[in-house]
Length: 106
Image 1 (spheres, rainbow, N blue to C red):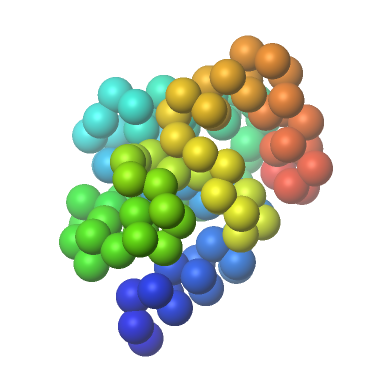
Image 2 (tube, rainbow, N blue to C red):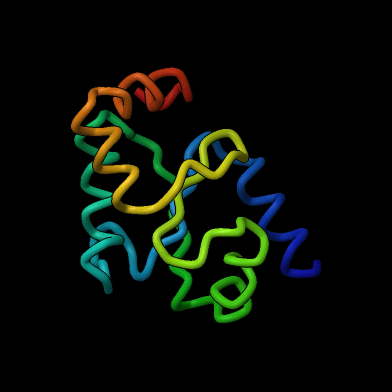
């Protein structure tokens, strides 16, 4: 499957998808770590993560797919929400909890 189709299938197959460097248990980047922690703090229980360091073709093409240049990248129901700063802002405002609940992840 071509990488762009693979990315699209991944973000459409799971309510919450976080493309990050490393894993929630072993993050390889501070921004990825903070984004994952924020999602768990907001109540995400079944966060689907993809370690872009394991998939160089995804890492190279995801910014083109999403039109977002950096990692992590959070998708909810196939729609790009943003990166670490946006996730943290949503957590602080209380919106992230609502978004996670609406995604059926609490």
